[in-house]
Image (tube, rainbow, N blue to C red):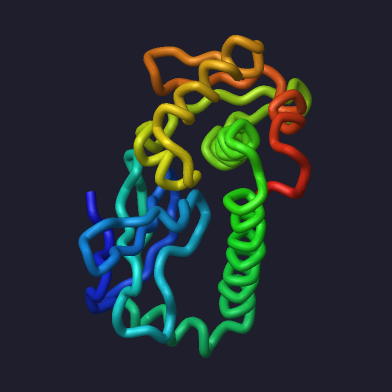
Length: 197
């Protein structure tokens, strides 16, 4: 389900309360590139811009809390705390984009898939147990979407998931439900670097 279309007038902003939002850009020939994912409690939208520069789609069932654009911009002027929160999120997204550039540019295919799964484990599973270091979640993207996001083929994504499963790093049920029994084992497959907390 499309939440915001590219080149669409921005009338409201939203907080993601639950679920995963897929962000993509369209090329002139109609192809699309997934450029990011947003999770709770991310802020969806770009203040002070009248037109959206990305497509935002629900990748899973999503719950949003939306506010009219004018109200958000008034709140930013009236509340330094709110303005600070949005600035902090913007800077976090910039840091994450830089980390993702390293993933796309330097990591191997096995490291890319492991990094993607670690991002999902840390951002989707609200019951992530720090003590046991385990997580369980449904993949929000298809294999084809994962390959687009990771810059590798669908076949490579499937092979790497199979390898992680065979090595006991993950379990997969019904093709989409992933269980990670040891986050630390998955982290070791990511090839170093800091991932999104």
